[in-house]
Amino acid sequence: MDGQRRAWLWQRVADGADHRSSAGWAGVVCEVAVDEIDVDAVAISVRSGARVQELVTVSEVWAQELEELQYTLGEGPGVEAFTTGGPVLVAEVHTARGRWPGFADAAGAHGLAAAFSFPLQSGAIRLGVLTLYRGRAGPLATGGLMDAAVLAELATAALLADATGSKRERAQWIREDSSGHYDAFNVATGMLAAQLRISIEEASLRLRAHAFSHNRSLLEVAQEVLRRHLSSDLFRE
Amino acid sequence: MTFEPEVFSDTVAAITARLAARHDGLSVVNAVIAACQTLLTPAVSGVLIADPRGGLTLLDASDERMPVVELLRSQAVQGPCLDCTMGKTVISSTDLEADGTRWPQFARAASTEGFRSVYAFPLRLDGRAVGGVTLLFTRCGELAEWQVRLGQSLADLAMLGLTQERDPRRVERLAELTLTAVNDRAHIAQAVGVLAGTLGLEPESARARMSECSSRTGRPLRELAQAITDGSLAPTALDVEKA
Image (cartoon, rainbow over all chains, first blue to last red):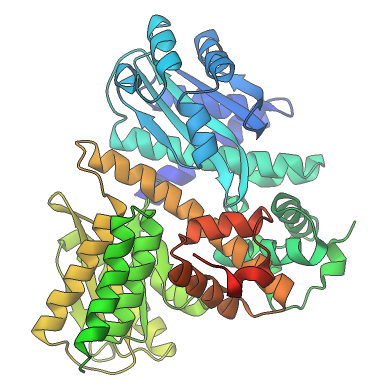
């Protein structure tokens, strides 16, 4: 049951993204989120540090204003999700005055009542945030929470695959294993990063690129790295 | 099976000290797993929890070798941990081989790995169960009644570590914590890889060193993983790291 819903969401985004330009997946994730979850607007932003933010896509201008507000004030659910690495679910924004004094009031004036932010991340790799905004207070229903978490995972997979470059590789992010939350994949990533003295993110990208270009699963490539069957020299640039 | 009162009190104190210091949930779960190993002496202990994205996800295990991890994980589909979560009650099989029709795939995979019996204790929250603690034994046999009660108490402590606050949003909060813990697990695995790659260790010994450092210094695993992956803690300094 759970697995079916997940596969259905992946398929829906993949189909939508097929019919769009190269950066289309993010727009499709936002569209699917607004369609399927009881919220009014959705935004995905990518960050390369706490102070640098690039807004990838929004479903409504309203979401863009709220994203900019957080960025300007340096506080809010999205900022917190990114810095702490955990989801931030706020069913009643007005109760968060102690947490974000500036944002709670300003967002209230913008008509925001509830916000739900999910970090786009894979272990040490933090890429950005998916935030759902709603004008009515109240928690996400269980199904909505699940959909949002799956869509955040999917957006992460898409971002990681996008970053590896070529168009052919980009198509691979729809593979379910591309989120790479296998333990073996993560251990292999750390190992490669240490051996090549590169960042975790860079090591993860090289492992992915290797798997995609040799048409192997991430798990297979990871296991070979761990058994030291694949020399780390293979991943040098 | 007996143990010294001193061992018992030290083992429980390792959990409660983390609770009192408000460590992250995964650190508490890690201490609960160590306590299961010491006090109930299974071959393997593992904790699975409901993933907000669906199914059960593995939070932590005493043995991180792939076949063992896969066996624990397979319980998302079939096995004692799924049953204890659905039924909100302790589930056991004192002889997996004789009991082969209950969870055919799980029993087969378990016996391939040399396990003969299993106990699963539910993680109880507000009248529901949101996962379970699985204990795998290489011998057949039943736990004494006090051991079953102890197992459930340890599972309750794990749950307490995951939802420490007295908050009406406990269930929502658990979703936040679970997603965070799943990512922490990925982060810790990356740090294990960095250690293994730098020091030329097997992943299992790298993981053991990290755990040892966390217990010795009181620094949560999550924090150590962060320090190792961002380069602020050199892998070679792990053995001499002070609290």
